[in-house]
Image (cartoon, rainbow, N blue to C red; front, side):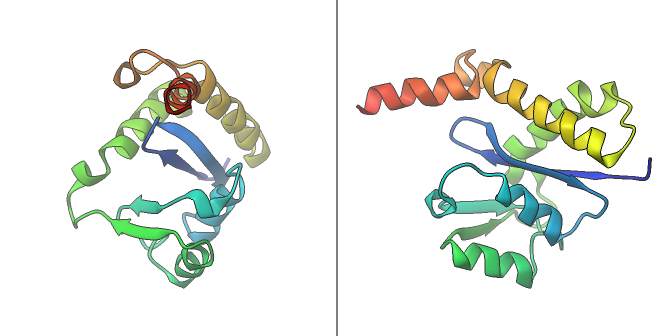
Length: 146
């Protein structure tokens, strides 16, 4: 299979993967498809933080973010620590998902990515979340608000 790319959108509050996509190009279309998988109202997203890659900083992304009134935050040039949660998530995904699989096609990758994201959000505990899953952490936080 030719090289494919994965995009995940991560909620910094609970490290939940709220959007995902896969495709043959690392471009704005890949990012837009990830936004299309977000459940709920995109207008609820306040900020979109990324590195300075061209797939994130272009007219297509400007239009998408403006349409939903989402602010943009860019990492400082050459500073991966500005995007530490995303970088940590990518490392986990490479170790637990990408390097453990042999994808037969883009369709196969998309199916497996959907399953991985579901498991990541609902079954994988995170030390930084008090050894809860992202979904459990958010549910507990909502209980405290009510």
